[in-house]
Image 1 (cartoon, rainbow, N blue to C red):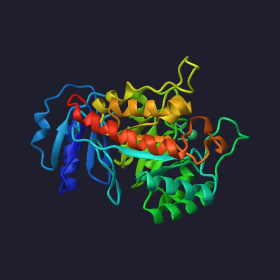
Image 2 (cartoon, helix red, strand yellow):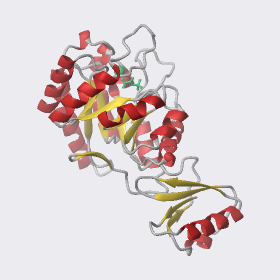
Image 3 (cartoon, helix red, strand yellow):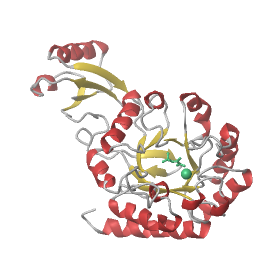
Image 4 (spheres, rainbow, N blue to C red):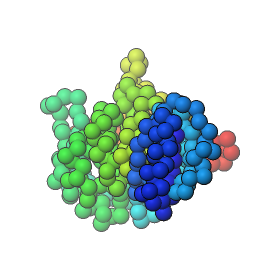
Length: 339
Ligand code: PEP
Ligand code: MN
């Protein structure tokens, strides 16, 4: 069960309520986020919801039988809108475009990408400064200094930053320089990292684990929400299957399913999803039609020279064209009442 508390609830009222819920054999976890305060009751006994409804200090009470609760749509029907400031949102009914290189490489590269994004009216730049690489000998990113430089240039241009955080110790040092913390596919179930991101008042985008189920992605988001952070975005980036013709299998089924199960915005990453440059645009557009609230893809001035993931990276002309097509496709989707 989820109980949303009123802002004016007193400690005495809260204690009485907790005692009552404990008395039916439910264990309570208290959650306080930037937006509200909740009691999550976990238990098996059937009970009549009206037994609690009259308590002072309760705003809403809901039965949510899913293992994930706070991210469930059963509790909160209204979609979550993630506000990045300056009129930039990631939310249902909108189409966020995030583009940029796999890795941040140099000042020159950052400047060129920013110029491209501005020309294409893309407001969020992606890029990695801490890179999770399958080989320890591959380029592992410019680190915090790279992020600081990037932030300075992006801020000047009015562009928001989404970048991966790999470990707990990086959260604080990155805080002033990011708009969205990205949790990578290799870290989706790093529960220490998720716990700590729950304590941060900044947006978090969680990528689906390489072999992760939809349910597991939602549980990972539940970690962050129950830790106190409601500013969450889910990202489908392809899963590992038996298929070897593409880098991953972009599971577009996950998009309508996640949107039906959760109130959180859903973003699709076609670059990692298929891993083949020439097929990234069609998978991006398919993601839009599947109901995504945003698309994140890799773009670089000269993809062949990119330090990482060049094989799935668009050049600026391809990226500008795709951004346009994403907007057109989104307009088309909105014209279909079913979607
Ligand atoms: C990335 O976005 O560059 C990345 C490493 O993604 P993922 O965690 O999905 O592999
Ligand atoms: Mn990449």
